[in-house]
Length: 386
Image (cartoon, rainbow, N blue to C red):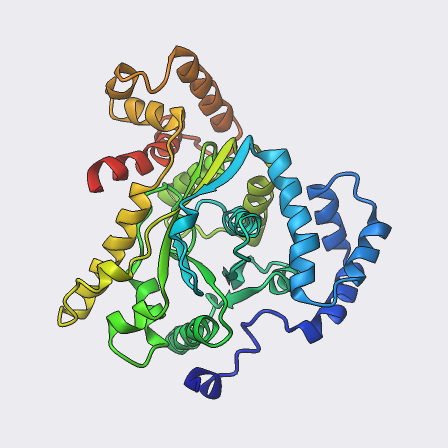
């Protein structure tokens, strides 16, 4: 018996039911914003043909596996040199909770689910923050693609209860509906690529269980996944945000800022993109002392997830170049991990990205350092903590 389903009504956070798909499709057909976005992502789209295909989708699975798959495949062909996955044999043969580092607002999990489809594993349900549901059609599309909503813009007094509800939904999904889920290791992207699992995420995951911390987390079958982009097209936007927050401590991104990051992340060049399925963490959790202080226990679990992610990054020449530049070494050039051409190409790219930034009192040395950190931090963590 699922106690969570009886305690909570998940209607405001769950994906759409199949019974709601046809009506949602009719709303999307009438949405100019949805049509504009599709034409942006899939140039030359025959809208009338696409409408006919949409109306043939009577279930979420049909929508995801045909139209959703087609859209993400189109983005991959236009914006990546390669997209692949390794470590698939480590995926458990049961519903699991995939926890990954977080680079791109949209494409991290879109690419992951595309790859999981390609290897016959089926897509995950996806945790998505309500701050990204900028337009009603975006809310419909993500729910049709099996996303569930993480409420962030709620009064302080409601945060704890919303966390309990979210956790209950995740436990319900893994244990009762038997679907895997994806959630980022932290709230929002690690804009400097210093990927660390937040204790708050683990505390939330624990809430929906009915036993001790380790038993609750083990029941979710957590599998870390390392995501590696050769090129982060949003690097200049992230650097710009760092300066804005430095110069204006009360700076808060607008919805337009999020929308721009989504657009750039979807459409611009990402080079080689690789996902690595790391080892499920239950064997490591079994070795922890359940009598530890709660905060120390959550920190120990976070460190296990981090180590798996750090171990399984894939690195590209610009990671090594950025590290050598930032730390003023020749460590990786001496090891022939890149050559003079790679370095010159990266320097040109770096300046091109900085040139895109148009803000008051633009601080180029600071911006350059922040972008170098983005490309070097995964390598730094790999070297120091594995």
